[in-house]
Image (cartoon, rainbow, N blue to C red):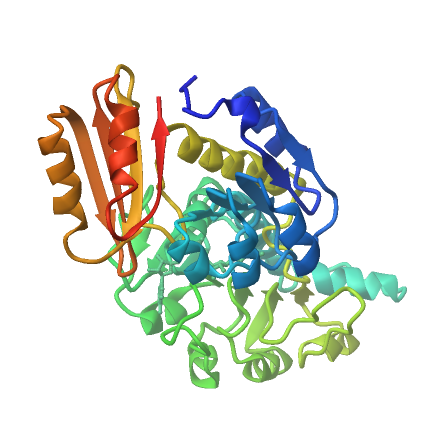
Length: 413
Ligand code: NAI
């Protein structure tokens, strides 16, 4: 277990919003026992009060971290968002104060991939339609429009974390996998890249979207592109709500051009479980259609929550233990080796000219032997990590704190 200059028992951690118990266990196992767990989110006022003296804060999506909270946080070294999104945190203010923010972008990847595969199977068998009919007392035993998934072509748009997982699962079920991505991607298994979206749409039996929301993907599925899809094919979207023109999709389903669709994300989603869900797809159930609608739960599983607890807790631990900021959403990313036998100085500064040469001048004038040095900057801040011989580190830290432009510095040993 790595040592930190501040005794781990003294490092105060506040976890809000009922973060999964795996987070507490992971922190405790790593020696961080000074952890306060709160089930609710706190208001800005409450948080400004409670955050004093806290070194690391864990939140989910409801707690808002704006400038006022950042300024009230006198000891805070890192924030862990135990969720995927980080919109609830002022990433600029935290950056300027030298506070890296971490999240869990991969913890629910598998959950989304499994839902997509399940939906593809159910839609190819017409299960939503058959189930809806049976709930109305209709028994229609027929093989019409019921297909196996084996030997069908799956077209994946966006071959990233989720797209590749879907690819692997689909191949294991005997599907042919084609994918289209704007970036050249290494195909997994026998998956084949396809040069254009149009080619993918015209050749796939099931089309599934796994792209981010950006100017190239917003309403990329126009009426024209939906019409270009293979007759009798299926469309699945569990990525972002603004990818598909839902009016055009409804028309294609009503006309029978598409065999079915599964939609998990919508351009406008209810803000809470008390608000009604409005969508052109909704009343399609009147015609007992082959459409699966889910309330943005692609990534919402108990396993994902557990994984998030471990993933984010580990990122906080790694930063506290060794200074690595890898995968931080707002901070220069530095992956650091362990530093046995040396003391490690972490220096966060405003990205202004001259800071690095000043740091090097100090070390050279004091004749301090540097055993490793790592630097990463972004537009706003610079992050320098210096490993030095034991015995001189406390003095070096003192000197570093005097460098103009310093935001904060820390010593690990
Ligand atoms: P990722 O960033 O790993 O992969 C996205 C891929 O899309 C990248 O390979 C990128 O190059 C590609 N791409 C970007 N623009 C494109 C374009 N115009 N055409 C083709 N490819 C394009 O993202 P990840 O983690 O796989 O997530 C994919 C989507 O799933 C995201 O929008 C995310 O918000 C969503 N998501 C939905 C969840 C749910 O509950 N339904 C849960 C988790 C993620």
